[in-house]
Image (cartoon, rainbow, N blue to C red; front, side, top):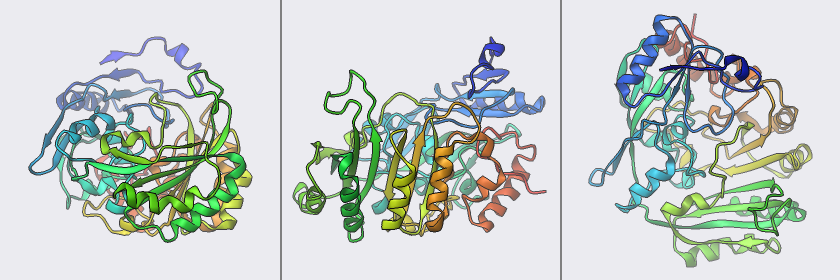
Length: 428
């Protein structure tokens, strides 16, 4: 571990971790040492993975950076991968593809595998196979007392870890199930923002009868005016439809015909691709970005909800509307803390934030979607740390689930040492 120099300068950054010490462990034993150091001195602990999105800032204490925990092993016979905390999704994608296998990965290859799983793991083939967190078969967790525990489904703490974004300790490694998926049909249809209404109308109608073998989403964004972008996209507002389908190109072409009929496209790159290239579907930037975000799990997404959402979003926000349903409705074997599985859509909105205070654009989205909102997912909440209290966390779970999590927090982290995240208050 090393002291963090220039604490006064760091404090000038309006939204940054400001720890007393930074630990960069290379083994699980070094994670244990860092946590014990904090426990012996009654210090809070934060965990940093790949830096996507704004977390709850850590003021003092120990920040554990997991980037050097980069071990990855795959058993092609059992289709199990063992992944350490610093491994990125793209690395696992490529390694699994060598064996004709695939993880239930998400839209971005640059995020950490474990960070993605701790937030539920809502992936590209989610409607067909469910949440990636439900495919975890074991995990290694360093709890607040500095103990390294191996947990498996059936252990009370195992399910609590998955879906609560780091509230119970430092996950140093997971064992997860891979699937025999070698290629998919997918990509993006991109339209000018002038067609937003007709495109979303067509997608909503299409999604109502789409098979569970297809997972799709709609996105609204304004591209920055940057030289590295194609000239026809610089500074342009667009609406896009993102498709991932486990089927043949011929089946895929028939499936998406109603979407193509919605209007003239700017780009259309739907194609059969190796699953290892599936990260190209959403085209998310590989560099970590500090942004704030909210989300709402909806019982439906009708014309009124669409109108309400469009009325409160604009060029300063990125909107992502994901169709749920299918296998996502099924209770997972892992016992992961993922509620509202009956939701039919998840709406995410991302925007810039200068500090931990309220973000008006996100407040407006939550209000607009309130009539259809069941709750939200903690893994898609970023920034607005002043709101990261018990009420916000409770809204991510059913009352029974939250009470169970609070009881486990009291047992394994009674001092709430892991609080640089969405907070679970220990049961008193």
